Length: 338
Image (cartoon, rainbow, N blue to C red):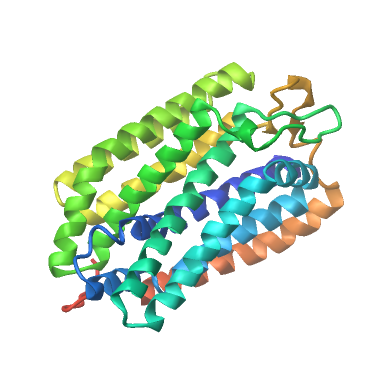
């Protein structure tokens, strides 16, 4: 495996970690106005993700930094072309971050309701746009022969990319509901289970359609064969189907594991459908950016690889320890999640 491919794979891993971990806390935010019945229960719901949500966002920073360092041409084209969309994502993320802090600044029911909904809007808006933006990479955007984006914000929206954004929102909501079943007790736990059962089939159907559509788009617009993209797509569909089965049977831990596996497999499907290109050009296929044309020098990639091989395991170990420490349920009767 050459260094360009290694760094492409590493970026896939980072995006998969971001969607896996940030996915459930986005989902919890989406459910915040609906599953809890009182302000106290909403505070409890926020406590389930309170110790980890900001650490989960670190993976987004790593994804951006790794792309900039390893594939500067990809970074430049994507961030210039998706500039307005990324600003909107940043807006949603800022609103969400502020809501965590400001909600507790007053006991006024109206004040708390405003910041509860702010958290929900931010938690829904960011993944919607992430789904649209990342799916554009394989669907294609206007790129000229110099590697410059020549379109506008509307060029990012197509039936496929819009559906991708909606599917990501649905999967994250389901993922968040299964997470809440692991971290809560009492009535809140029961309503989280009910929410997971209601979301299961719609989310899984949309997720299955999305990965299948992604493979079809890769064949049609990115000159890909059926293999290998069909392999992670099939894994995603099987994992999500098992998530439905475990949810209906009340196996919360297994359901959460399967929603997580399904999301990771969907991310792998997207990037497998993209490789060896990193951005497909819709105006001329020859203008597409590839891992070779968009990468940094061999020396730069070699130095970065040494740093990555040391730092990434440390980050994984530290974050794993954090989740272990905060593994207990929250509510009136805390207990260890088995």
